[in-house]
Length: 331
Image (cartoon, rainbow, N blue to C red; front, top):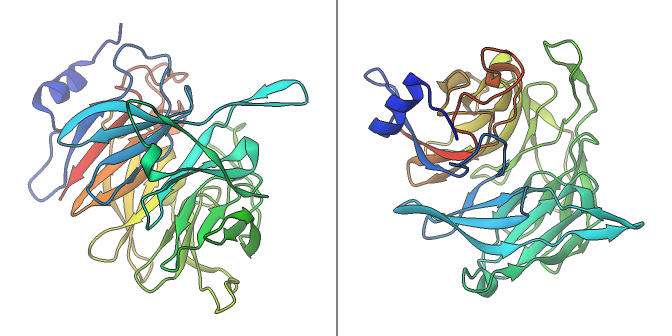
């Protein structure tokens, strides 16, 4: 049975965190794992279709969850099957998720070194569609994003490589490189080496890359040949520790989930960093991993890893919060 602290109980009853005048209102849209604190649901990314309905991949069941914000009950609409490699079962551990212009859904699968696809017609709760291979040759596949031409870009995690693959899929090509870096977390033992994580394009078509290890954001201008120029540092700041999934707000500012800090921060085009929302391990942000905008409303996936600011009072777990969930932020 999941126990709610006094503060979280108040949040659950009110449906919204207590905020000061002028601050964004933050609340839990849906608890994705209401019966357990044992991480029986794990979601690392989130996206939305054209109608504003949300989609998330669950790492535990390898299912694709659909959540309509107007009636936020998760339903399974797709599945990514495990594989047998050298006699061992390998789970897909789905990461980044995104739609293309046709409404087909794509998911990064790091252990497979692939991006898989479920076509729009197969996103069906009555008969969930099974994902099929779309792009290969992307070891550590993590974040994904489409440019305006329909080219898919994929981040390679600790390798720092960013890949691209055309609309027909197939073998991906390396187009940019974020220099490798390893950071030791404040516990003195945990190593953070992911330098190419969340991906997002701005209105001008410039690719932005979240550097989790440095707590930074880079931008990469793409040439006519699709190759990236040398990455340029947009911002590096302690407030970006654990930079993960990203999305541009309607005003052109980049919102970044700073997972280690249980925070969402914004980065202006000039590189100024500001905290949008931050809290302790009781939520509503709990190791936030990705963000998507539907109009002016932001939806955040909570990965709920017990690390840094998401450690509860005993310093070893994250069992005092709501767990895997979707938070919403309204300014």
